Amino acid sequence: MTLSPAALLSELEPTAARLVERHLGSSKEWFPHELVPWGRGRDFEPGGTWCPEDADVGGAQLSEAARSALYVNLLTEDNLPYYFNDIDRVFATADTYRYWTRRWTAEEGRHSIAIRDYLTVSRAIDPWELERARMVQVTGAETPKPTSPQQGFCYLAIQELATRVSHLNTGKVLGDAVGYNVMARVAFDENLHFMFYRDMVGACLEVDPSATVIELYGVVRDFSMPGVGIPGFDRHAQIIARAGIYDIVSHHDRIVQPLVHNTWRIAELTGLDDEAEVARDKLLKQVDRLGRLARRTAERRGDKVEVLA
Ligand SMILES: [Fe+2]
Ligand SMILES: [Fe+2]
Image (cartoon, rainbow, N blue to C red; front, side, top):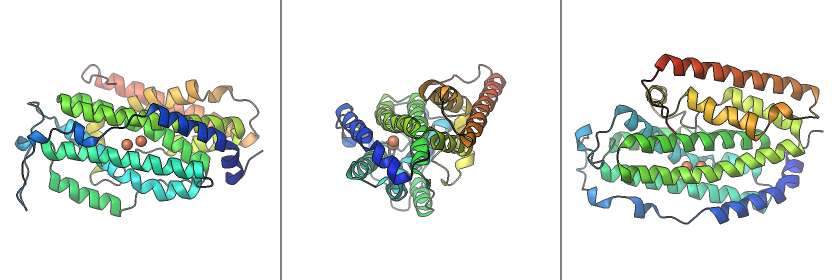
């Protein structure tokens, strides 16, 4: 039996309420301004220029990969609050969901405040280029447009875990303890977001397994990182992947494979209808394919790249 979106969300509302309570109990209030090394800051000349030597990241030399990761990760965070419209359209059937989406949006906004303030005072990347890119990305309205609650929950679960891994690994390659603390703090929040969406997918699999498996297959097959739409995204994504900050190996080994097999146990689901059985088969093959690609990538780069987080 496939439930309507409204019926599914109604059925899941007590679960969502419990997960919101868990989130509020696990998250601690924090302040971006307390993490930012303001003492490193100085005025910018209007119409000025930036060069890598301007950076003050605690004495470290930033790699090109670290700069690419900071650029993509911040612009991703800048854009996340603009997901609100699409998420709210799909989920906002009850106050519980409306509250969660607003709370999530506020937390994502906090992430961009923290990372931007750190980058502005440390001059780690070009602030003029960054602001122009933010305008392009947000104006371009590149946001996921889920057509069902299950599709939204599945995408957000994968996106949050991917973002967590990416932030943490970015913090590790900075070589600056202050910068690491900013990225690790943001990554901690992403984990709490991930837990909410992960468990909403789990609840969807219990209430309406066939429709959820079909949506999950589509999300895994078509997944792209939330930074799509950022100017130069493909080039930066390649640099980030070569450095092992976020690549096919992390995507398979740390995200898709454990979620599909260990968390949601897709291979063990029973009671699927015929269409969902086909989707499950394709999903499991897709995960295997990602795994083969990941192994080939890991072998090709040998020991040259340390596998992070
Ligand atoms: Fe975030
Ligand atoms: Fe998040």
